Length: 139
Image (cartoon, rainbow, N blue to C red):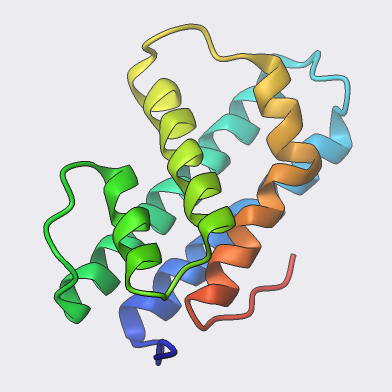
């Protein structure tokens, strides 16, 4: 059953859209990832987009009564099990929660390789996530 986006879904998708635009702007300004200010801005905006995606997923899981996720990544798995999210995007979004955890909690040094990968193409997974949640965003 397709998702009918409510205000929470639309607002979280708007945060993802704004954040991804900033990531693209910062990456265009420093594609070699040499300037700490650009790297920091990209990291912060990817983190914001990831958190908004997590919040969106948790909201849909709650509204649809899909279960109790034990972690942020579990919310995406529950959406997949309910047929609301593809396996590919569920896995990609679960990986994004790992990036978010590293960025927020500084569990380890943030890999510039991972940041580069997200800035190059990984951000498209967030666009696809929004689409599968019933919202088209434009970057």
